Image (tube, rainbow, N blue to C red; front, side):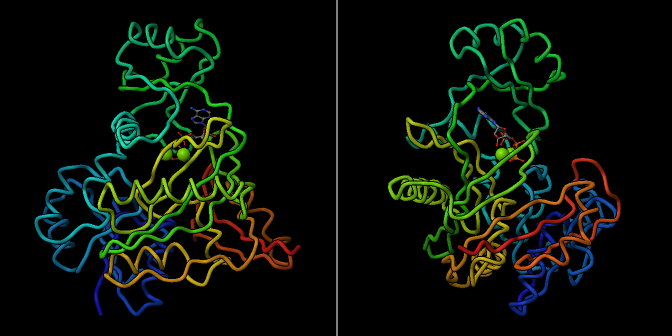
Length: 349
Ligand code: ATP
Ligand code: MG
Ligand code: MG
């Protein structure tokens, strides 16, 4: 059987490893941090920084294809790996999604709608952008943001100085604040031969920038559901993408706006573990391992709830709940805001 290389050993890498193992494949995880959650289930783990060329080369030589669970892999490391082994999804998806300005430009060039945005390099460009975009708006670092980190809300022009301070000199974009009726995401997959399949869109609730719950079905009209799936397919096709992608969308009276894309399995797709025969993790492994895509049609209504930080204290009660599947990531240190696991609750009508 083939060996899948996974860059990143967090919970997504762990659940990808489980899926690969179920398909009789082996997994080799590369993770700079200590005690990666994926370490318990992968067949092999390399603990080394992305600057360690020898470790990268040994890793690439030991696997048949390389995939990843997060998008911020340094370019130099990707160059080293790509010389030795195919990387799926490909480099273009990483290049586009590593930088919010590149990402939004790519999306609008494709004819898709996003929040109004502007490139911010200093206080003066922010003042100018605020004159066009107005308030409320959000200043976001172009790179490395996740779970709402690296973002500052600007409610009035007077708050601009404080917001730029929060960026600590990092390049940023200003986004107009979208008055959405709800947030949804499409978990979409594309195989090596170009077939595309999407899971049913899920409705997402965030608080303090972190995803709390995803519910399927999302409250959408049939037309909105079709739009969501078609625009996701357009993105995957444009990137000649192979694997699973998370596409986050705002639902507005003016139609669907794309918030961001993640070139990997996505937290808002965890419900598929208990709502579909083939979940997002297996779908991703199938795509990168050159298998046909599986049947991801939904057979149940599901609510996924993240277990963040102290939420883990609820475990004794959760363990006695009916129709509730518990997924824990095996992380030892509980920290505020840290994703420790999730539950998928089957909703019966
Ligand atoms: P993730 O963990 O999903 O990668 P992130 O740090 O990249 O998050 P975003 O997805 O850009 O951040 O923003 C987090 C949340 O903040 C969004 O899901 C949405 O609820 C809210 N948000 C972000 N941008 C906007 C906007 N322009 N208008 C309204 N709300 C927004
Ligand atoms: Mg993001
Ligand atoms: Mg997001």
